[in-house]
Image (cartoon, rainbow, N blue to C red; front, side, top):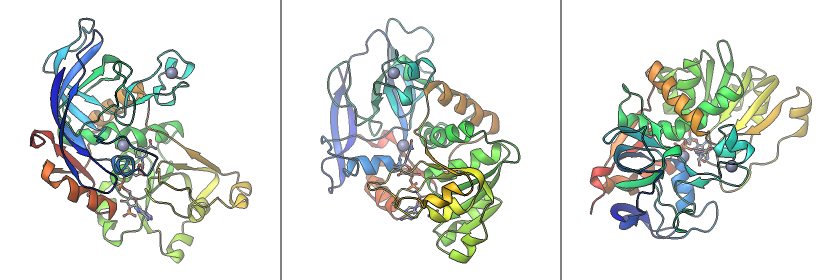
Length: 350
Ligand code: NAP
Ligand code: ZN
Ligand code: ZN
């Protein structure tokens, strides 16, 4: 067992504070990784504050991890010590069901193991995430980081990147697609960059009047203030797919109206309580769909990293020290993130 430094939530309302714990020994199929960078996802906040259900404290969030290989299990021969690798939201799945069989571990029929908020099969202990200095993960769930991507700015690709890439691919976004993105935060800014790189025409819906310029710089050709009903009305029937990344409960109706015939509204945000139900007639009359999407499988995550390397895409990040973590979470709750915080994990040791 190897002891690691971490910052953990110790209660739903209290601040994150230093903690340390032991990672399991490196088994034959495992890789031990020294973590260098970890992005801060809004899911970390939902989870640690108990938005999604009871939490076993101390809880160590973090699933946007980039680091270096420091130890390899006896059965792992295709990675090298010192190689830069990454871990996203998944560290295990059944590996035997039809979904795992087609590379959709994120939809494992039996249930996958989260990088945090899961139970480690090897030890029966809770899984602890990347707000820590090291992690041990089964080789299957370790991603290779393509060269040419700045490792700190690439960390958010492991959740914000794949979570937006996967639905854009699934709904066949390409040249000429008309894509809407709701919310310009961590996921939203990746959705804008990725959809633009795929050749789509991107409309960004935001509640924050100061974000228009950034949205255009990131690749949006139209920016709409979603709390302005007149502005919203002008978007009626204009989009093929909308990626909704909002972290809070909100009215979906204005976004249905923005969809063209057979368009799809894809929900990514995971607020604690449901959105008000859609108006059935908004769906019926133009054969529109309401859908959801959850991160992405391991194969697709690797594909997304290669796509980002080829298109020189990373997140816009603000690198922080551990001492700034609580302020970063508070800013995230105020929608004041430009556009992803990333922890320099060398600052985690207390
Ligand atoms: P984030 O950086 O905080 O961005 C969320 C954005 O939503 C904000 O920047 C803001 O954008 C908008 N927003 C916030 N509160 C709002 C409100 N009350 N009304 C309308 N808009 C509001 O969060 P994130 O890390 O991108 O995560 C977004 C959501 O996706 C979270 O719920 C997270 O748990 C979830 N998530 C889901 C998956 C998945 O697999 N489906 C994966 C990762 C995260 P504007 O200022 O532009 O309005
Ligand atoms: Zn996440
Ligand atoms: Zn499975």
